[in-house]
Length: 234
Image 1 (cartoon, rainbow, N blue to C red):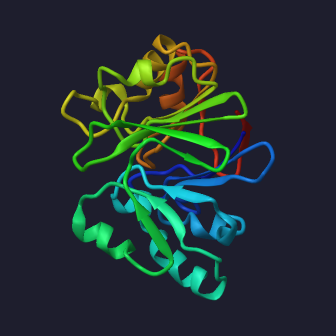
Image 2 (cartoon, one colour):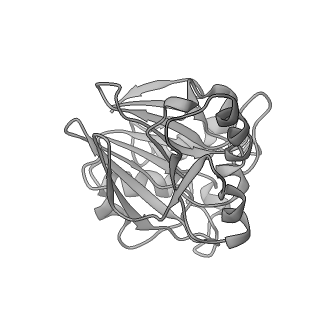
Protein backbone atom coordinates (compact mmCIF):
# COMPACT_ATOMS: atom_id res chain seq x y z
CA UNK A 1 0.00 0.00 0.00
CA UNK A 2 0.96 3.63 -0.33
CA UNK A 3 0.00 6.34 2.19
CA UNK A 4 -0.12 9.99 1.16
CA UNK A 5 -0.37 12.54 3.96
CA UNK A 6 -2.75 15.25 2.79
CA UNK A 7 -3.00 17.10 6.11
CA UNK A 8 -1.77 16.49 9.64
CA UNK A 9 -2.73 19.51 11.76
CA UNK A 10 -5.29 19.60 14.54
CA UNK A 11 -7.54 20.96 15.87
CA UNK A 12 -7.02 23.74 13.32
CA UNK A 13 -4.67 23.94 10.32
CA UNK A 14 -1.20 25.38 10.59
CA UNK A 15 -0.54 28.34 8.24
CA UNK A 16 -0.56 26.92 4.72
CA UNK A 17 -1.47 23.50 6.10
CA UNK A 18 -4.47 21.23 6.39
CA UNK A 19 -6.16 19.20 9.09
CA UNK A 20 -6.45 15.41 9.25
CA UNK A 21 -6.56 13.70 5.85
CA UNK A 22 -4.80 10.62 4.45
CA UNK A 23 -5.04 8.78 1.14
CA UNK A 24 -4.32 5.04 1.29
CA UNK A 25 -3.95 3.20 -2.02
CA UNK A 26 -3.47 -0.47 -2.83
CA UNK A 27 -0.39 -1.45 -4.81
CA UNK A 28 -2.53 -2.01 -7.88
CA UNK A 29 -4.07 1.45 -7.53
CA UNK A 30 -7.53 -0.07 -7.89
CA UNK A 31 -8.57 0.68 -4.29
CA UNK A 32 -8.24 4.27 -3.05
CA UNK A 33 -9.39 5.00 0.51
CA UNK A 34 -9.64 8.48 2.01
CA UNK A 35 -9.25 8.49 5.79
CA UNK A 36 -10.56 11.73 7.32
CA UNK A 37 -11.22 14.92 5.40
CA UNK A 38 -10.58 17.96 7.59
CA UNK A 39 -10.26 21.56 6.46
CA UNK A 40 -7.81 22.02 3.59
CA UNK A 41 -7.77 18.35 2.57
CA UNK A 42 -10.00 18.49 -0.51
CA UNK A 43 -7.66 20.87 -2.36
CA UNK A 44 -4.80 18.38 -1.87
CA UNK A 45 -6.73 15.22 -2.80
CA UNK A 46 -6.07 13.95 -6.33
CA UNK A 47 -9.15 12.87 -8.29
CA UNK A 48 -11.74 12.64 -5.48
CA UNK A 49 -14.33 11.17 -7.84
CA UNK A 50 -12.28 7.97 -8.22
CA UNK A 51 -12.19 7.16 -4.49
CA UNK A 52 -13.32 3.67 -3.50
CA UNK A 53 -14.58 4.99 -0.18
CA UNK A 54 -13.95 7.29 2.77
CA UNK A 55 -13.57 6.62 6.49
CA UNK A 56 -14.24 9.42 8.96
CA UNK A 57 -12.72 8.38 12.28
CA UNK A 58 -15.07 10.76 14.11
CA UNK A 59 -17.23 13.77 13.40
CA UNK A 60 -15.25 16.69 14.76
CA UNK A 61 -14.84 19.40 12.13
CA UNK A 62 -11.05 19.06 11.86
CA UNK A 63 -11.63 15.51 10.61
CA UNK A 64 -14.64 15.92 8.33
CA UNK A 65 -15.36 19.53 7.33
CA UNK A 66 -14.12 19.21 3.72
CA UNK A 67 -16.69 16.48 3.13
CA UNK A 68 -19.15 19.38 2.80
CA UNK A 69 -17.54 21.09 -0.23
CA UNK A 70 -16.74 17.65 -1.65
CA UNK A 71 -20.48 17.36 -2.27
CA UNK A 72 -20.14 20.26 -4.71
CA UNK A 73 -17.11 18.64 -6.34
CA UNK A 74 -19.07 15.44 -6.93
CA UNK A 75 -21.96 17.45 -8.33
CA UNK A 76 -19.65 18.64 -11.12
CA UNK A 77 -17.66 15.38 -11.38
CA UNK A 78 -20.37 12.70 -11.18
CA UNK A 79 -19.72 9.13 -10.08
CA UNK A 80 -21.60 6.09 -11.31
CA UNK A 81 -22.67 5.41 -7.70
CA UNK A 82 -22.57 7.39 -4.43
CA UNK A 83 -19.30 7.43 -2.51
CA UNK A 84 -19.33 4.98 0.44
CA UNK A 85 -18.68 7.03 3.59
CA UNK A 86 -18.01 5.06 6.78
CA UNK A 87 -18.65 7.26 9.80
CA UNK A 88 -19.99 7.20 13.38
CA UNK A 89 -23.72 7.58 13.94
CA UNK A 90 -23.22 10.51 16.33
CA UNK A 91 -23.28 13.47 16.74
CA UNK A 92 -26.45 13.13 14.72
CA UNK A 93 -26.64 16.80 13.74
CA UNK A 94 -23.21 16.60 12.09
CA UNK A 95 -23.81 13.24 10.43
CA UNK A 96 -27.01 14.68 8.98
CA UNK A 97 -24.87 17.21 7.07
CA UNK A 98 -23.49 14.27 5.09
CA UNK A 99 -26.89 12.80 4.27
CA UNK A 100 -27.01 13.69 0.59
CA UNK A 101 -27.33 12.07 -2.82
CA UNK A 102 -23.56 11.96 -3.33
CA UNK A 103 -22.72 9.82 -0.27
CA UNK A 104 -23.74 6.34 0.80
CA UNK A 105 -23.49 6.61 4.59
CA UNK A 106 -22.40 3.46 6.40
CA UNK A 107 -21.54 2.62 10.03
CA UNK A 108 -18.12 1.77 11.46
CA UNK A 109 -18.25 -2.01 11.14
CA UNK A 110 -15.57 -4.41 9.92
CA UNK A 111 -15.84 -4.84 6.17
CA UNK A 112 -14.16 -5.44 2.83
CA UNK A 113 -13.64 -2.43 0.58
CA UNK A 114 -12.18 -3.39 -2.76
CA UNK A 115 -8.84 -5.05 -2.05
CA UNK A 116 -8.76 -3.77 1.54
CA UNK A 117 -9.99 -5.29 4.79
CA UNK A 118 -11.08 -2.67 7.33
CA UNK A 119 -11.39 -3.23 11.08
CA UNK A 120 -12.37 -0.73 13.77
CA UNK A 121 -11.65 -0.25 17.48
CA UNK A 122 -13.62 2.23 19.63
CA UNK A 123 -11.55 5.30 20.46
CA UNK A 124 -11.47 7.22 23.74
CA UNK A 125 -12.60 10.70 22.73
CA UNK A 126 -15.43 13.11 23.67
CA UNK A 127 -17.53 12.00 20.68
CA UNK A 128 -17.97 8.50 19.26
CA UNK A 129 -15.14 7.45 16.99
CA UNK A 130 -12.78 4.66 16.10
CA UNK A 131 -9.24 3.66 15.37
CA UNK A 132 -8.97 1.97 11.98
CA UNK A 133 -6.86 -0.94 10.76
CA UNK A 134 -6.46 -1.56 7.03
CA UNK A 135 -4.94 -4.77 5.71
CA UNK A 136 -4.04 -5.16 2.05
CA UNK A 137 -1.12 -6.40 -0.06
CA UNK A 138 0.11 -8.44 2.93
CA UNK A 139 0.63 -5.20 4.89
CA UNK A 140 -1.06 -3.72 7.95
CA UNK A 141 -1.77 -0.01 8.45
CA UNK A 142 -3.26 1.39 11.67
CA UNK A 143 -4.46 4.94 12.33
CA UNK A 144 -5.60 5.83 15.82
CA UNK A 145 -7.76 8.80 14.87
CA UNK A 146 -8.19 10.99 17.96
CA UNK A 147 -7.91 8.95 21.13
CA UNK A 148 -6.38 8.71 24.56
CA UNK A 149 -5.03 5.44 25.95
CA UNK A 150 -7.30 2.40 25.67
CA UNK A 151 -6.45 -1.10 26.94
CA UNK A 152 -6.90 -2.75 23.54
CA UNK A 153 -4.93 -0.30 21.41
CA UNK A 154 -1.55 -2.04 21.57
CA UNK A 155 -3.08 -5.36 20.55
CA UNK A 156 -5.10 -3.70 17.78
CA UNK A 157 -1.87 -2.20 16.42
CA UNK A 158 0.15 -5.39 16.92
CA UNK A 159 2.99 -5.61 14.39
CA UNK A 160 1.57 -2.88 12.20
CA UNK A 161 3.80 -2.10 9.25
CA UNK A 162 2.88 1.57 9.71
CA UNK A 163 1.26 3.09 12.80
CA UNK A 164 -0.11 6.63 12.40
CA UNK A 165 -0.90 8.12 15.81
CA UNK A 166 -2.59 11.09 17.44
CA UNK A 167 0.20 13.10 19.07
CA UNK A 168 -2.06 16.00 19.93
CA UNK A 169 -0.42 16.78 23.28
CA UNK A 170 2.95 17.13 24.91
CA UNK A 171 3.55 14.83 27.85
CA UNK A 172 3.49 17.85 30.18
CA UNK A 173 -0.06 18.65 29.04
CA UNK A 174 -1.33 15.07 28.97
CA UNK A 175 -3.67 13.47 31.52
CA UNK A 176 -5.96 10.44 31.44
CA UNK A 177 -9.00 12.68 30.97
CA UNK A 178 -7.66 14.55 27.93
CA UNK A 179 -8.96 13.80 24.42
CA UNK A 180 -5.56 13.00 22.89
CA UNK A 181 -2.38 11.03 23.38
CA UNK A 182 0.98 12.65 23.98
CA UNK A 183 3.88 12.08 21.60
CA UNK A 184 5.67 10.07 24.27
CA UNK A 185 2.65 7.82 24.90
CA UNK A 186 2.29 7.23 21.17
CA UNK A 187 5.86 5.99 21.15
CA UNK A 188 5.32 3.70 24.13
CA UNK A 189 2.28 2.12 22.49
CA UNK A 190 4.18 1.70 19.22
CA UNK A 191 6.99 -0.05 21.07
CA UNK A 192 4.56 -2.33 22.93
CA UNK A 193 2.83 -3.16 19.64
CA UNK A 194 6.14 -3.94 17.90
CA UNK A 195 5.12 -1.56 15.13
CA UNK A 196 7.62 -1.42 12.28
CA UNK A 197 7.19 2.33 11.77
CA UNK A 198 5.59 5.20 13.71
CA UNK A 199 4.35 8.49 12.29
CA UNK A 200 3.12 11.23 14.65
CA UNK A 201 0.17 13.26 13.40
CA UNK A 202 -2.61 15.60 14.63
CA UNK A 203 0.19 18.10 15.25
CA UNK A 204 -1.11 21.10 17.18
CA UNK A 205 0.39 24.34 15.77
CA UNK A 206 0.89 25.65 19.32
CA UNK A 207 3.67 23.10 19.92
CA UNK A 208 7.22 22.92 18.61
CA UNK A 209 7.12 19.77 16.45
CA UNK A 210 10.81 19.12 17.07
CA UNK A 211 10.12 18.93 20.81
CA UNK A 212 7.28 16.45 20.27
CA UNK A 213 9.53 14.33 18.09
CA UNK A 214 12.25 14.36 20.73
CA UNK A 215 9.72 13.13 23.32
CA UNK A 216 8.71 10.26 21.07
CA UNK A 217 12.20 9.26 19.99
CA UNK A 218 13.21 8.77 23.61
CA UNK A 219 10.81 5.80 23.62
CA UNK A 220 10.78 4.82 19.94
CA UNK A 221 13.94 6.05 18.17
CA UNK A 222 12.53 5.60 14.67
CA UNK A 223 9.51 7.86 15.25
CA UNK A 224 8.86 10.46 12.54
CA UNK A 225 6.59 13.47 12.12
CA UNK A 226 3.82 13.55 9.54
CA UNK A 227 4.62 15.95 6.69
CA UNK A 228 1.92 17.09 4.24
CA UNK A 229 2.52 15.73 0.76
CA UNK A 230 4.78 12.92 1.92
CA UNK A 231 4.22 9.49 0.38
CA UNK A 232 5.06 6.49 2.57
CA UNK A 233 5.10 2.84 1.44
CA UNK A 234 3.31 0.59 3.93
